[in-house]
Length: 521
Image (tube, rainbow, N blue to C red):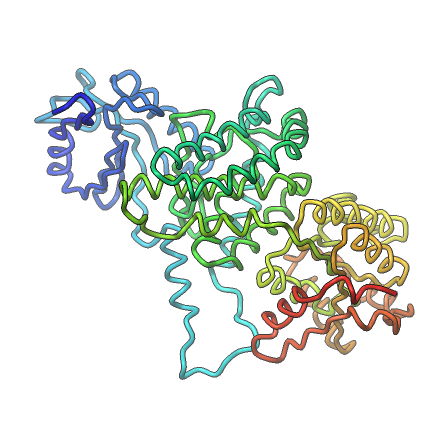
């Protein structure tokens, strides 16, 4: 064996533990995982690598304890304890007395098919068109849609309560964020992907000066937290009926201390890479609704690109020199993300219960857009109170929405503002905002018979699951006003015929095809 050859760890202990527990073995680059049908036992390989040192018993114990601490924040029912391994390599014992020869992270074993990547495959098959069934106007939300909707606020709460990095630490600093991205690009070059990485290096050179002040601001504001660090599809599992993140990075603090939107971007990017842009934007918007972190939209695109580059590097390393990587083409995904941004603005128009949120949910998934909901932002500003729909609070809400929309457009995102927009002056204010950003502007008109409106609001109130508190009394006040669109707004007004198959795709295509010429008056 030459000095450059990797040293293979002795597997005697692992082989005997597998025999004892009749366990199935899964081997990763740095660990062995034994599955006995009820429990999982994760044992660190005694390795010293450029990014990891587990070469001594003391270091492996420390890594196991850190893995337990980190993952019990997100998955306490999955991560049980750190179990010492006693005995000898030929006769090992999990637990017991006597000298310790190694350590294992003790976990519950979850069933096959429970990983989010596996759930995604199953969802794809379920959504496959059955020629024997008639087409439906719009697919009903799947179980996976609902699970992601629930996971997003759970992740936002985790980030909100996670430990915050001191402003004086290097974590989240412009220098570290930029250097980490350049390191990935350099590594891609070193494995023979220089031509592939060159466009991203040029993009980073152009973007970094613009983003450094925002990175610095987020660091000084205490936005940098001890997050997950590796939130791709295979590190989220359906556990006890709920999507749960697991397998945080324990061996390198610099990879888990960072901007929460870097965690979010990893999962969003991986959903995109697996051809589920609809779920990617569904999850992103659910997270932003829960966290309110629209201030991070200017740096989100960088984190999406960075995460795609990381996965591209990992895939190429696994494939070996000269071999095509398996799985999604992450570099192919990253190229559109560095293309010039094309922001556009769409506002809704219609009284409460007219279907604005339903239609814009489908639209944001089809078009890949950021949505700002008045019902969500009103509560963020004022909480829940009987005065939520007073004139002064309504005006303050629209001013807040205007500020958020401006930030989103400046960051290059297609943006939807979901609000009633019954006042012409308010619509004009947002049309002017779009013009200042050289962004196409559209109004999405929604309407329904009054009996339908009242039935929807009553059902929504009884369900108690929607952000809106509008009831039939609020509706009556809205209907007393002159809510009609003006004739000059017709050229840039869209209508959704939701009773026709494929309406969401057609609506998205219509919106994305609009240009600024239709917005001139």
